[in-house]
Amino acid sequence: MVMDMDFQEKYDPQESSPLFADGKAMRQPVYGTVARGELRNNDSLYRGTTSDGDFIEKNPMEINMSTLQRGQQEFNIYCSPCHSRVGDGRGIMVEYNYAPPASFHSERLRTLPDGHIFDVITNGRRNMPAYGSQIPVKDRWAIVAYVRALQRSQNARLGDVPEELREQMR
Image (cartoon, rainbow, N blue to C red; front, side, top):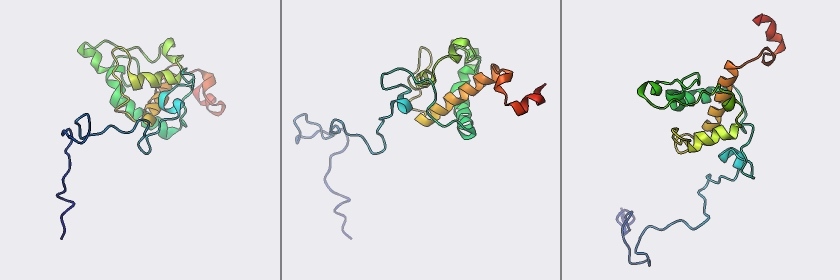
């Protein structure tokens, strides 16, 4: 059995090296390189913006029951401690003297573009932390879809109900 590869000479992370002018053994990736599968060239999906930098109006994901269920699951984990499970801004953290967040049911938040909500989830705003590093892109969009469903649930009109189901509601 040959164990040459197991015991070869190498530099450990953060070790110095006389081989390079900066004295570091670790090298920066070549400028412009992107890890396989990590190219973020779709502004709508990855940033919630148009190519001009304006927030997109509508969620770029397909909205179906699976998306909404995933959004609900992620919302309950990351958002409900502050925003509450119904999105009224009265989560448990408010009882511990955290500043109450805005209600998702306010007119201002109901009229925001979907891309703006995605941006706030990604980068945070005021007291809200950024979740871009914790929640994958598609799950952030699922949360946006679920927030819209919560808003619709509290601000629905009879015209929003399909014709065949309206009679059951009267």
